[in-house]
Each structure stands twice: as C-alpha cells, then as structure tokens.
Length: 296
Image 1 (cartoon, rainbow, N blue to C red):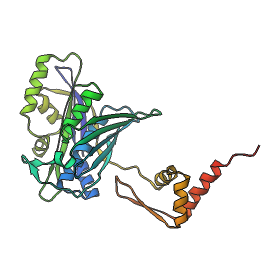
Image 2 (image 1 turned 30 degrees about the vertical axis):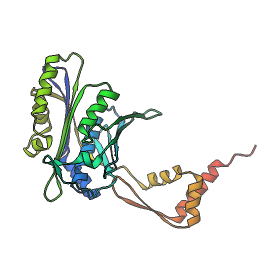
Image 3 (image 1 turned 60 degrees about the vertical axis):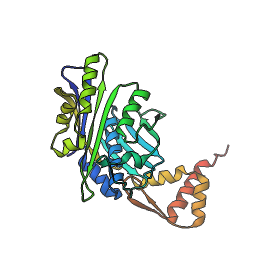
Image 4 (image 1 turned 135 degrees about the vertical axis):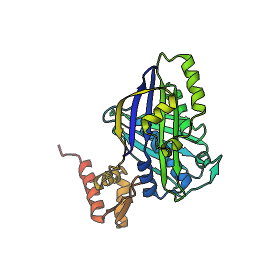
C-alpha cells in the first residue's frame, strides 16, 4: 500500500513529509499507456500534488498543472486531503531518452508555467502561478513555495521506469523550514541534500517513507500523521451531464440539432460515458424550463 507520512524533526523546527506512491503512479501509467518520459513526468506531478495535499485541511483539494512548450504539453494532477489522487498527461506517447542517466523530463516539459489551484471549500478557488525554473517539477515546486507561499522548502521527487516500461519506484519528500531554524542547520541541510541518493533509488533499495525522511535530514523524525495513497477518480454519468449543462444553452442546442449520441471520455481515468439523443434533449428541456419566468 502506498503511504504518505508527515512528521517533525525531534531536535529542530523542521516539518518533513515523506511519500512512496509506486503503485499509484504505475496505475496512472497503465490507465494512460504512457511512454517512459511521459510516465516520469506524470509520476512527478502526481507525487507533487500528493505532497501539496499534506498541508490541506478536511474537505479541501489541490490541483497541480504544468504547462510547457515541450512535447508533453500539459500535465495535471488533483489530490484531496485524504491523499486520493488522479492525473493525466496531454501527450502520453512521448519518450526522449536519457540525460545524465535520468529520463529527460525537463526537455519533455520545456518552458512554461506551474499552476497551483486550491479548493479550500470557499466560494472562490486560490490560484498561484510561477514560471517553470527547470521543468523537472521538484525544483519548480520549491520555487512556488518560496515565491507564492513564502515558505522556505526543499522538494525531491523521483520516478524509476523499468525496462518493461512499468513504474518500479515513485515517491518524494518535502522539507519545510519553520520559524526558529538556526542558520547552521540550514547550511547543514543544504550540504546534506547535495549528496543524497535519488528518491527513486532509495525506494528501490527498500526504504520506507519514514526512512526516506530521516535519510533526507539526517535526524530522527517523530511522525504525527499518515495516510494511505490511492488513485481515485470520482467521475460519474451525472457529473458528465452536469458538465454538458455547463456548456450553456446554445452549445446544447447545437448538439441536439446534430441528432447524434455523444461519447464522453474522462481525461483522468479514461472511462467512457454514452449520452443519448434523448438525454441531450432532456437537458435542453430542463434548461428552457428553468429559464421561463413565472407569470405574474
């Protein structure tokens, strides 16, 4: 079972989050039939959204969107406070080979923007946008925290794709520096992180989320929260019909005039929903009925 842990360093004001989500990212790869570079990019964005979800409150969710001019074009992942996550990559059949022994995610994404959208249970969503620094996702997330949230943070993400194209390891960690952290501790962490093994290698070596957290900071961790991680898509036929209603009366009239049934596929889980001509006309009738003003 994939797992996210949240804890504090016992001796320093450091909040640390550790994640192993190999099964979740492999499920995403299987659903979307991604090629290795796309698998690694999608996996990192999924892992990043799960790390972001660790700071949400009950009932909240976060959407992480990466848009670039590289061949992958766009990657989206959505995670809620329970660590249920789903995601997709716009162009799943992309593989660019290796760069310095690693899958070249940065070239796959290119130049662009990282968008963070939070549904905090209020009337309006929170939107934060930063330009991509490297396209490697982890560095971009750390930059987002520093610029948009004013939180000093270190983020590491890793996905290892095997020779059979399946995901063999995926996960990450996030370190938040809290008020009161000593300058010498910051310098120690910066040096330690430079020599750290990739997260994917640690997972391949059998390290648990807690062991990854302790390896990252070199200090004992006291875990105070843990959650199972699950690939989950809440799409339903009713939600599809609601989305069609959101198109507006004119677009639905155009669909009705065509007189054809509609096949709608969920981008996140690839489930297909058939919407019949009768259902389209029923939606149109319900909109027209609700728009009629009562007689005085």
